Image (cartoon, rainbow, N blue to C red; front, side):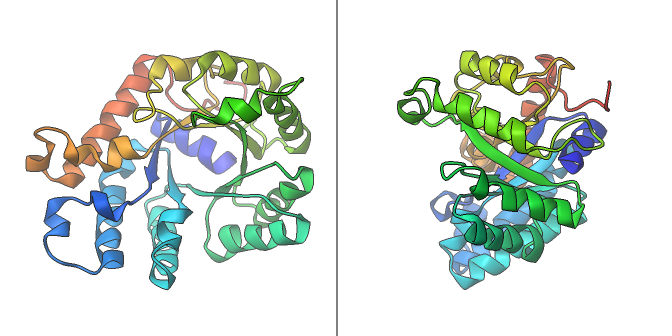
Amino acid sequence: MDALVFSARRKGSATVVGLDPDPRHLPPEIRERGLAEAEAVREFCLGVLEATAPEAAAVKLQAAYFERLGPEGAALYAELLGAARDLDLPTIADVKRGDIGPVAAAYAEAHLSVYGATSVTVNPYMGADAVAPFLDEARRLRNGGGAFVLVATSNPSAPLLQDASEPPLYETVARLVAGLGRPGESGYADAGAVVGATRPELGRKVRGLLPETLFLTPGYGAQRGDAMGVRALLDAKGAGVLVNSSRGILRAFEQAGAARAGYKDAARDAARRMRAELAAAGVRGAPSRGG
């Protein structure tokens, strides 16, 4: 995860901008021009990406929103990954894939090599052989990427599965992550963990199991996770967390008064405000190794 950690340190930011473009939530200045759906989403995402790049440590693309657009969506997904690279932003392909070894290897090659994402999200339900091919591909590419494994997610029904066993499933998965990762130059392993901001006490327990793992933290803002909840996930160096916001940034133009400023300004201001809120809680990005 070196590329993400070094970007967070360079920017002094733990903010990840999530691109989850819902065509039902496009700004009026785009929607009213009658563009084809894929072209409207393209203009919107490129505008948000350019506006928020100075505030962000990374960008996360939710693949489902592009897949639903068909072949044009696949091309747009690739274009946006390239646009993020041009802005010197590492990328997270939010694909949550998880399958047997050869299939996982094909997914890994597709998203890390063909499309060119820096890292991916992975579903570990089928075990280590569903995760290892993604790490193998990232190591082959040597681009500072890796895989974020779903450990303790922020969705409402997650506890019914992740907390239901003894030991809890999240604890078993955390041990899987610890065993698969290899440390990089940044001091963080290439196997990261998805740990939501909505249950800080649980996040604190996961951090105890994964003291040197980079967390990707969803649930901020729209799902009512907040900066103090994120603070509970910090490691002993006061870092190790990247915090994603999708709707809170993409739909900022829908807030009262924001439409007059334009969707780009609204997205930039929301990302800037999130960065400041996290910094005020002591969440500023990632230190250098030993820092």
